[in-house]
Image (cartoon, rainbow, N blue to C red; front, top):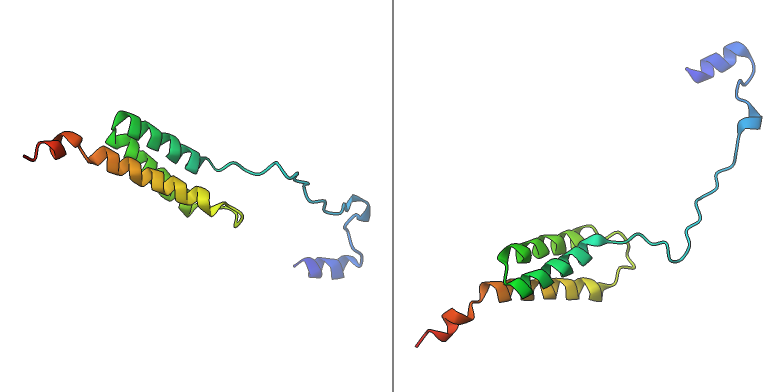
Length: 106
């Protein structure tokens, strides 16, 4: 349709003075986006371990899986993700293992 209008008018109607070159946004080295899922998973796992709360442990598990599912960069530290998931699993283990039941098995 545009080419038909161009042929009919005989000239290009675009204004060459309004054309500006694309300039990408400059991002400094320290302006990386913060990934809040691993931080939330660690905080929920700490709350779960300290309070022996199954709810907080389940929240930490969900946030840990979400952090793995939404990895944004390939430069994300694999050790951080591994430690987050291991601490989350430790919190789940500590919440579901009841020492009173283990000691009463006489």
